[in-house]
Length: 301
Ligand code: ASP
Image (cartoon, rainbow, N blue to C red; front, side, top):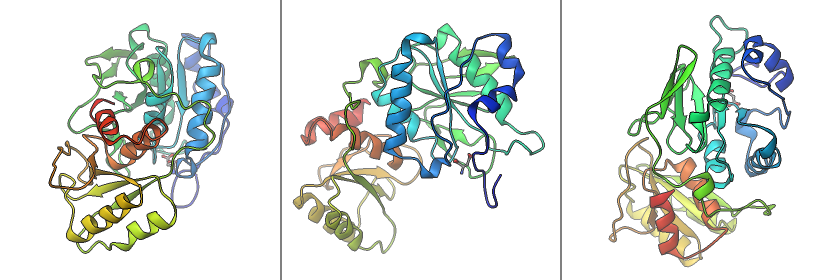
């Protein structure tokens, strides 16, 4: 642990040896890719993790990736969009440090491995397993700064649960992912640059000037309510669009759909939160700048 939060401290091999129960029902190899606080991760690590899954695809029945909780709604969604996998890809994490009373890491790791080893977990897209719940990377997000049951999808719920040590699946994700996804960004070293601008009372227009000055390719507007824009943000969005930047309106509320509205500027993020919307826009912009096609991606991925 580090002052003020959790920091990665041990290798993946050491992590496995903390949970000897893992060896009882499957063979596990550990690959150490990074040892980073998840707030310091980004496209380089997304691509590195995706590549590791892809390169080792034929050798394993499933994949578990340990990750910090703070940005655990981001990396899994990138893999959900880009990894060509029918095999389970499961992210897990811990809210409490290993030294805490009732540390959650060991059980989360064990449950993530049981999900990754379960044939019924195939073809469900990338998953996030914590606290006995199996979440879809498309929907779950961190909803509470400190509590164990922080990963939720307020509208869509979970794919299933882990009960008595066994995964039990209840639903499937309808959105396009993994094998059916048209996105293949494996050869790209650099992804398009997309920033998020938060909407609030009195929000200044100069954030858009900054995005233009820094040559952003896209902007996600984390708007109030259903992505509504103030007079100031509308002016900023217009300016950005004139500079060739693709703008997508999302909601800062934490759940719900931003519906298409011709009276408002920009595309809409559907039910993707701003961080996930950023990842889809980065990925979509590798293929097209056609607003209609990008909008279609937002409704289907
Ligand atoms: N700051 C840490 C991280 O996201 C917190 C955690 O692991 O839960 O990497």
